[in-house]
Image 1 (cartoon, rainbow, N blue to C red):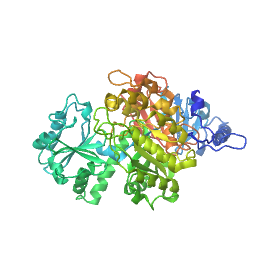
Image 2: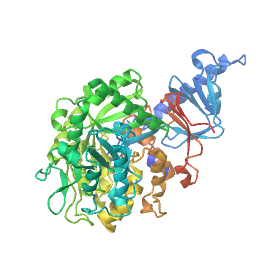
Image 3: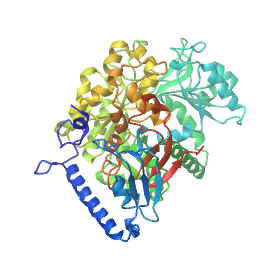
Image 4: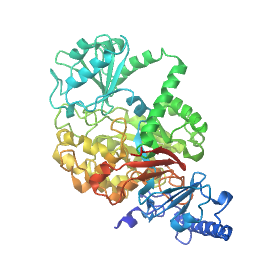
Length: 608
């Protein structure tokens, strides 16, 4: 099957992720009819422009484009990966594509950008990140470059010297499997709090693991959290202890809530006005960080109804920095009674959308929290953690089906993915091939027999390619070679089932830089030059679709976003090289020249 056959939108059929295109009596699809209509409209538009320009003047009034980009290499990222050389925008929408059509709508007031051959793509979508978490991470200590535990101890000590006693110190990004040596007195490779507690006794410390699925706390933080040696592990979580039963300061999965609740109590002493101002600052920081990387839309992977309400107000006041699709993350009790077709949110212009529910069924592989069918190869005493009971997930799935909401479940381990697929198949029943577009977030490690089920059930594996190359150094240690080869980050196998893979970064778990995920998608190459099971690579075209059209489909927005087509929103990125044809290694260094959101330039690189 060639690329066009694999990825063009087809008539609705069970087990195909493009099952949103109704079929007409002549056998054609809605997409075909829309394209015909668009072509007719474009012809009429050019005709009108020609009539108004008979005296060699430019089109006047509303006929003129607001923005035109000419002399470009335009990668449209539609289903057939068409290319063109120019694009024009009016009122935030694309009104012309191609040199002749664009020339016809250039008027005296049109802002004309000569791309000088540079590459234009649709605005990118990060289909799985934590938007406010990204803003928060930009205000914390960055622990991701530490090569040993002592580096982190010194970072925290330096920060404590600049803050009043009692002030919380936060950091993010540590990963014990990426250190050059084990911390002194480690427990299963994890650090013990004593040295940091001795050096920083008067500041509570909360350091989030790179995965977000574990955290570290010093003695001051554990006192505020009322954690003692007698504190029991919460369901779906673990307080790591030494041989004497003493808490070492590391909290896995749901046990993190013990420390985070203590931090929240401290934060609650601030006024509501101060908390909202801090939140708005985090949104501003996250937005700016995304836009400079060419990201114009994000899928926020799990926030509260309260934050959704605030962001809806911001969207209506034109205060959001980019487009956001938000998944609601809460338990069944709060969801019950609040989900319905009418409770969905979709503001004008796709600025803010809420129609999805997020559930996390397990943890991450790095801290041994991913839920596996067999024990960990390097820690045989555990098979990971199930963080939400299956009965609750089943009830949430039934609720989502009744209310017409999309369900997005975090599942990393092969056991977690299998259980989610089983529940999806059970709850959706005969409607599994319909247009539910239910997702599994991450889908990193699969039992081989479960891979075909994604295509069969129409389930979307929303995966982050940067996790593959970031985690590969310890995947085989955790799973063993056989399981790693058969089911770890199997993009090629999943795409061949008919599934699409919307890409992203999981920021702030990883940096929000899309270049790393694009490069990983097509090379699976590690920093040491080795490739991680390269037969599972995406093609270059698939990698571009994974950041453009496929996320739009995964977010029910393909009619407005995701490709450069007539009448779609004018979210565009200008690059300094052709992302489709440049050497693979150049994907890592490709520069964003301009980011255009709704037809307006919102980021421009410094001119040297």
